[in-house]
Image (cartoon, rainbow, N blue to C red; front, side, top):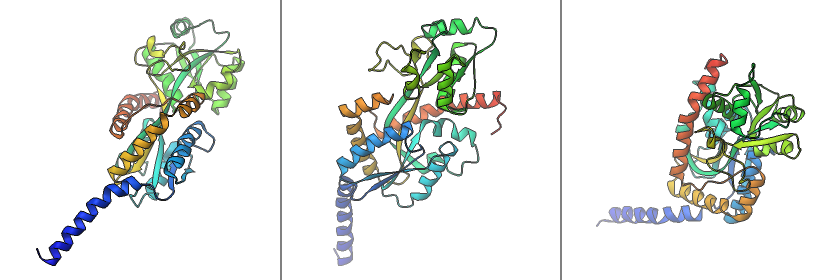
Length: 328
């Protein structure tokens, strides 16, 4: 073997040997995560629980950069633009609405192809949507709510966080699948809707448990059901909506993603570390206090879940837009 061939072979062996070591040593410096949630909002608080644990585990700081606005578009564009080096040191936190609403609302105008730009790493947590009614509404279950709504001459109004958000879409899914005589009423913010529910100005609301927390601390609101796959562990007596209306499963979820091109070994390492974090008893307890529940998923399972969410919600978003006369 001549010197050139020997040098080439040695270089290949060194590169192969270095690749797994590089992934195993990752990270050797701070990791930046660009997030669409405003600082202090529920998804931001949830992810910071995980980020703090990762910082301790990695002995490197996980720095969260909040870029809220435009339904998540600002963060997605910033993450795509900041990820020139595919080394795993700039990651992207996304939310359910970015995938279930944004691509339809901004069809042809997004400026970033989420599938082409990012690869799912891990499910961080999900926040199932619940349905609550004002205390004077004479119902105590989801089935009674549907029957009561269908006796009314005018649709019962339901509040939600915002138009096109996960709570609103859950209400629309519930309406379509239960055939309940209900209709969405828009409010300026989630807190306005909660206050309207507390005062009886609206009879019902779809919202995550964290958003409903102020209302649930009073005797003015009754919690009827939750749109989780199964009953949540800290509220075992709260029925799932799908126990009454098949297929009503909905949550706001938080997923960590990497720019396309980041080595798979790094993606798998981060996935494994996040799964260790979300299995920690103190993290589970803190999540539950925030109306959040973890789901153990590989990177491939996370990608499959996100694909299934697109297939589920895109037709619903399009139908809501059609009914409201919104053009893509």
